[in-house]
Image (cartoon, rainbow, N blue to C red; front, side, top):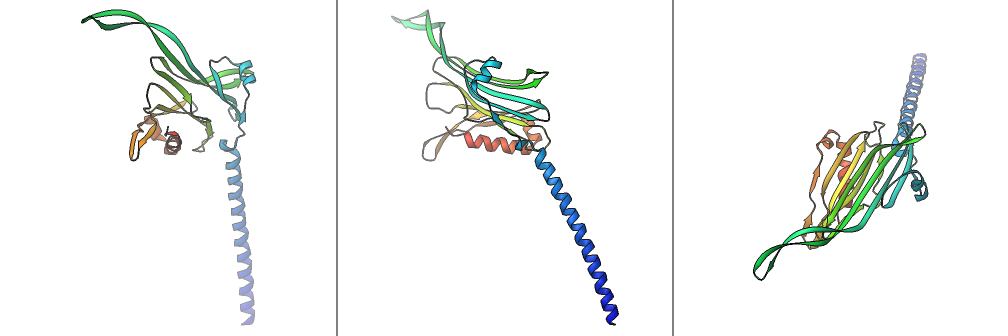
Length: 243
């Protein structure tokens, strides 16, 4: 009887050790898979800032350089930078109707206008040359009031939210023509490869307690195809909507 119990204990110990070894192997494989996933994640890429001298030497652009970044992924070496061209003005000949001595007359007059533009360029190095991948351009031209065009501070972000190995590049900016404290027009642009996503709307202003103005939002239909990208874009939008 004692021999039977002893043999049973040996078998129990043997299978217990075997099962533990198999579990350890499974854990090791899972750990390796996690390491590979983390290593290949574009979020972990080193993003470098580029100085104005380098951009001025290698690229043509208008206005003031705001932000310039460089990174390397499996598709190559990339450079992205933003510029703002503010408040250059001109005189425009306009025809207006005025009333003189009770009579309406048409006269021509020179009207002062303001202009503002934003630019965002994405280049990739191919055959030792800079090739334009895409460009964002928007403007407020011939504005009779205040022309507004600016990027949200440090709004360029490079991610791989859906883990498909294709980086998403997103930025936000405002372009408006106004002469009061009304909400600004806002835009969020995201590129994933050659796929472009967009959110348009207005900033949100608190005039008095419990009274808000603006906050409109309209998203492009293709955002519905990837809820991960949409949720990220909406979070970025809400973070910058006030102003």
